[in-house]
Image (tube, rainbow, N blue to C red; front, side):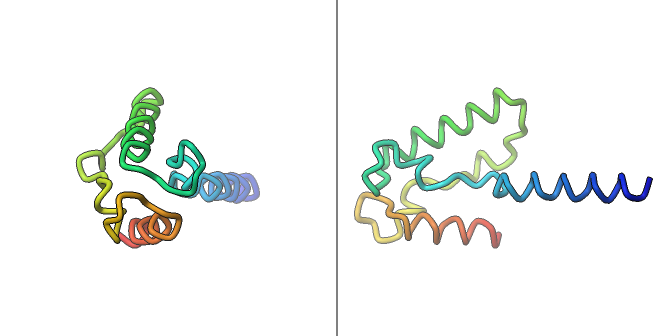
Length: 95
């Protein structure tokens, strides 16, 4: 019985880790794969993720505080690069 519980906990933690805490990847947002996320790509991907979560019946507790494009585009040049995206995700994990 003890072995079964440990195996279940291990399997659950592996699945949870594999999901990356449900953090999206850069390519999830970079629709045209040009290495830059425009505001349109950002908003479309965000809407798509929210819709998928709703269809899956998942609670969207943080939807009102979801980041907006300018929160991630830290240098305000009109697009998000991989570095800005990674920095923002790092900050999200800390919070």
